[in-house]
Length: 418
Image (tube, rainbow, N blue to C red):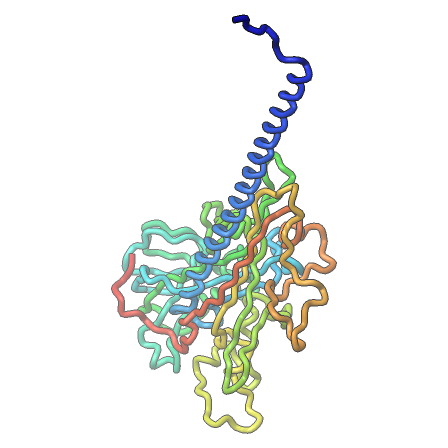
């Protein structure tokens, strides 16, 4: 038997190489496609997780808002807040500051003045900018409501019975979510109005201000937005309360929009502030609580008024006023985007068209409240939920703060805190 020594011809080699190349190319394309799909799904999961984390953190604080705090300073929203300039500018995300009483801190006061408090038991630590609430014990003989004063710590306190107070006049206090507490928390002059404050109690007020800010990425032209939280205190110890004292909560939060769902009286539809109505400059942030009915002037009208039934003809019902005491829900809308843009993706667009889609004359779902991106400057591109190659997700929740019904201050019966 003779074996053939014939090999492959050049044509056979070329055909075999071509077939092998096609097979390898198909395998490579399949692998690349699967890798791209995996990356896309990973980005989607990441932005959903960031949105849920941010919403969970905010809603937890909102639910406790107003506990032991006057309704006019429990929830304070800032429409279109530019964290880079600390100003209100069109097209930027909203900001919101939430306040509630700390259950784990209480001290007896032995003397009080507009400059300082002396407590019976040393305080382990208080940061500059911490809000305190001073409550008189015998206020019933002084006024029809609990005699109290909101004050702000002036300097860091460590293992001391002396608490210095910030002397800032309320008229010059800041109105910002990333600064020290504003005019509503500088009532130190009240401490000298009555002797009851020398035997009062002091409790601590927790502040959580949320806003969105963008930061430069190292070695990259991109900027990444973050949801930030500021407690109004000097956390880094540089004796200055500013943006450096904020902490990041969630990455990629591109937009934060807030709306108030107000009280409904009789058969009226609940009104929403922040969707179709713009907050005027004089009612911005901490000034919003001045929106009270003309028939009941003064910031504390809700603490001394009982609605007559039936209402007299032509009487303005305070329960229908644009006032924080009438807030029944806070609607929070978040937009989360991917951390890295996809060059093969134009980018999601979460804005309605300029004309909107009308159904019976009603915009069906203003998913980003009163946000407008018409005629904006390039500086707002970090917060505009359109294109750019980013994947986006929108998350909305209406939170009911059940502590806004407070109509008088109180001293809790729990034991003194640490």
